[in-house]
Picture (cartoon, rainbow, N blue to C red):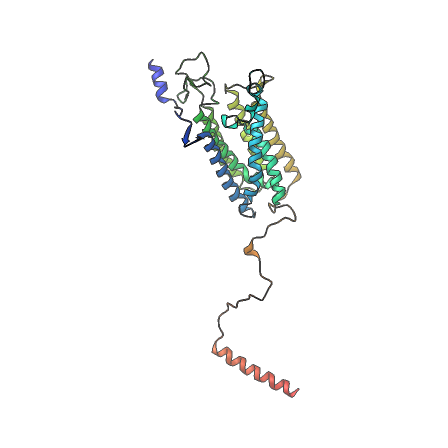
Length: 329
């Protein structure tokens, strides 16, 4: 009993509420975490892309396609990797559309978001890899912020543990494993990923200062960093998941993410040895209005200093001499 009491004092408590009601509307904290992450990622990407010479806030035009497709991809990936939740006898197939009940997957979001970003870049003239490199640190930070939503929902936690930073989960929570004591603590996988992603943001920002981190290589490093961490956290989670060859589907997805990241770095390092001169596709460059010079004299305003009396006198003398010479000719 003494040990249990000591463990509970040192453990991480879970929030007692996961939403608030604003009149007829219910706002889930998980959604707020995701929205906040999207906003922060947009601001960081805009700053990084603008420093490269892109039009300010062109990232909004790209996000208009990338964000909706990311949400669709996240939901589709979750449904496909958890078919038992939605298909079969006694299941409501229409629940695949009930995204407000939870169930999105970051790997699906990456796939859908990549398609949307590619289309957005074609639309705006931005190089896809320039956008991806500018996005990488902000995206990883957004993922860290989104994990706090799992904390509010008391979901996606890890195996039982007696470590002092164990996570408290209400025994009445549907995700609480049957047969365990009510005061059982669990690995806070959300916190592990928050810390790992936070460190990754610092690494990406540091590496991103070098000329090496161009042509998509920084985004490739993001995939390697995120995927490597996700392999570990996913391996100790106990929420239901499809198992393929002894591994959870998200573990396979994380392994694939690492391999894709390595492939991007290797291929782009061989294809592009020079600096990326512009974030725009050839012929689609944007020129800042401040860099333009008017070619019309209709609205010309002379801002030079007025002539001095001496200059006026010299000018009159020169003019008289010139008239005399012309008359003699």
